[in-house]
Image 1 (cartoon, rainbow, N blue to C red):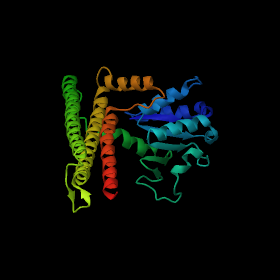
Image 2 (image 1 turned 90 degrees about the vertical axis):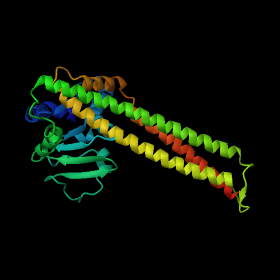
Image 3 (image 1 turned 180 degrees about the vertical axis):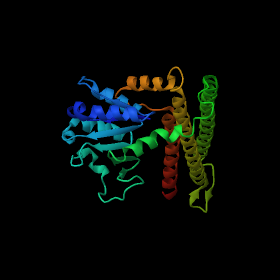
Length: 311
């Protein structure tokens, strides 16, 4: 589990550095990423490291709420939909205005952990934690996988490597199956669109139903609705494949920590550093874009068909 730590440089030496060192010693499996320095391209570095992280911990100091740099890092975390833990060095310290949209109800009921308050907005969330309950949060984060994965042969390097290779192969097979699904849906949608175009071209050759509506328009609208259903099914399957592959990658990265090198984790780090400010678009997002594009075409055809039928 990777955490990006947002903090004020003023608080680093006095308190934050000790906190991070303490957390690193306490929580095996937790990696706390800290950005220190005043380099000119710090925003690119922060963006890359936040993308590499799974969650963000914002350590709030006395003057943190005034920092524009902290506001920018919070904005990046929100844009990347990273869960944010707020850890106040003192309960009286103020939060940044950029977090106000997430505080929709000051009287919200506490969560499952004592002292936890969750403010939600869409898929993003902000959780306020403290020295009493941070252990519950981080322990829960880092043990979700660890408590299921280790087995009796976990220390057997050969067996572990054999299982690792087998699991990597299942990930590759999943990608191949997804490509086959994409090819099938692209072909199916192309056939549907081709049929609709052929019907629309024959608009003057087909009869008029009840002397009011041309049959070609009815068939085109109905076929487009079928196409929309097909696109929704396609997007749903792509989401399932993306979730399953993400789970596989988490397990692969976990196993790599017990092997010689962390290949996949390093590859992801290098890629996010290279992307920098640009938003990385995964293959799954690009594939979903194609499905959405087909769906948009069907919607246009339905609107045009209804409009022509009413004219």
